[in-house]
Image 1 (cartoon, rainbow, N blue to C red):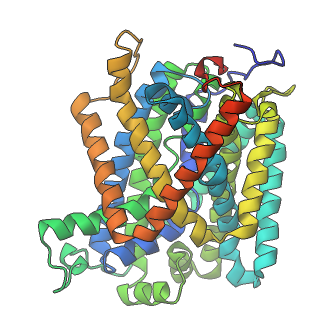
Image 2: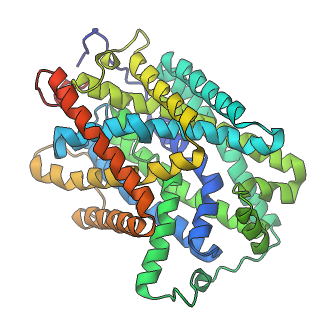
Image 3: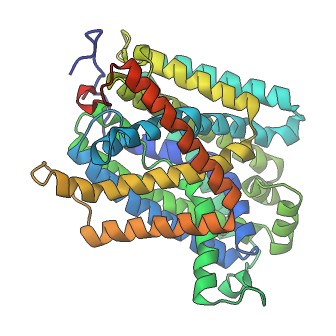
Length: 461
């Protein structure tokens, strides 16, 4: 379907571009610093931390399998915003998209841009204003690149995906073959006399730490957003999600194990206590000196800015879909001569720059996870709703394992969300407040739209 300017989104993405987008939007800054947060949440137990990285990967793969069914049966631009609107109510879709604009999507771009610069602060003594200025410059750069067309942005994403694997593979190889530390992988070290290893405490510890790892895995939801621009979405979309997320779980687990093989437990504890959370950089330095450290630093930067590029490519498609449905700024529903939603891209980047100016990396990361996990849970449950609501809809791919796997995935997300609310109620409450703030805007846009509901049928396929 054409939009009001007579132009439409181009179908130029194949399976490798899909894998690159998922991997590119997933392997960013999180793997380099979230390992420290996971360790803190398991009482510095290296064995339990590895378990949590594996559990986080399994949860993400299960979620990805459910999203693959949604994307294959409805390969439309807008992804989760469209699914929630059709499954529940137009308000649910709007809240997903507008909370993304206010925080989750724009905040992801902002936090990644800051994370690309943060590891270099120690080397060059950047002040906070300089750090933020460089982060804003990165956002502007990738905004310009994405305005030139999805083909250019996808090509950069493909190249950066390969380059970002270099520091991860380097640390993995160094740790496995040159690491001299023998980490204590006993799970018992995650517990104390005050928190004995009862079933409840095991679930609590694993759940709380796994929740921290989910931000490193976040990215598996975003390929569906550009399903309308894939050449063969019904085949390539589930394939890209499954291949990419399985590989990412393996890489993340091996990366953290390699770090433990290089840096002794006492040094890891001391680093994290001092606020030095980028363990991979120190691991490379311990084995290869400054050369290894700079390879990791540069690789980290390439990986993170590649994720910024992927975010700048994907997230504006949600605002485009919302504008086409009458529930976002009208100009964001237009496509330029390059076949991309230019105004949506500019609006996305502008909001990201505002968040860079007024928030820190830690604040942004804390706020993002709860909102994302809650909306992901709603989208996964939508698979069951669609099977009931649209039984005759063509489903070229269905979740492996059927309904039990979908229910299991939903239950896992519920356990993680409830556990995180108990352990960190303030951060969880902030996420719920962001969602609540979106609701008045829905009725404002509906009034401006002449009282009509969010119309997903107007979205460009």
